[in-house]
Image 1: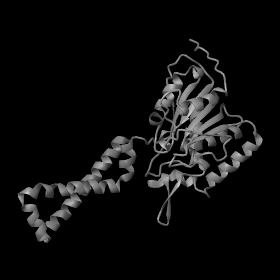
Image 2: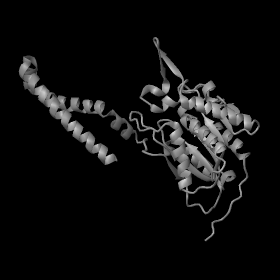
Image 3: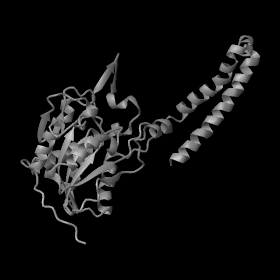
Image 4: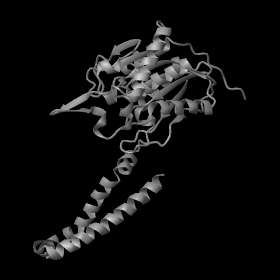
Length: 324
């Protein structure tokens, strides 16, 4: 895929270079000042470089979908599961699932968190899994959230993962985690049960809006982001999720199926959005920015200790050795 994109970029750039060079050649013959300027020895090299730079700029504009999504290294074509440290000699029916947010991926988002969890004896029986999914900024390849969740759960079934799963979702990953809880409570015959979720800065009511003169713009929508279509105030997905979650809360009023964390310093997702419909709500007193909510520095960091103290109350580890 990368090689295909690179070849496409090169072909487009060559075409732009030929086109710009031709225009520049015509201009030099019809604009006397430009012709004289380019004949001057000092500026001759600049006249040769102008078509090159212009063609690069035009290529970036024309192929911004490839340039930005490929260059960031974040985009993945399909939802996938990645088991961390799969070589551990253990068998467990308990999973801790990490779900990254918008414009990110598992390795980037959960590097610190996964390292701390792996070294925490309270969770030595849990199989740690990262979920990756498409987060293209320009391309329209992002799946609708409902379809995305179905694809993720199908990955669990394909890998024949059975047991209880606990979710930690950051930002958009928190919305996905809630939809996975809804799916699990409605599909009682599934081999994998999503029992509990911790959400960090999840935009259940959409992201914050910024006002420029008389226009309001979603903070997530600096670039075209199709996922926002599902988080709008009147979006069918959001209304259906709110309705289904309310029904589940009525069925399990005291179960505390989730717990939401938020920060007043979060410039992307406000407290009202981040705690909408949550059983439990906890602010980060230190006040972290949105992209730092899931990145604890050590085990005493609130971003780790508060989450893991809640998670540790949900289960007990019963470690089994693999049978050879």
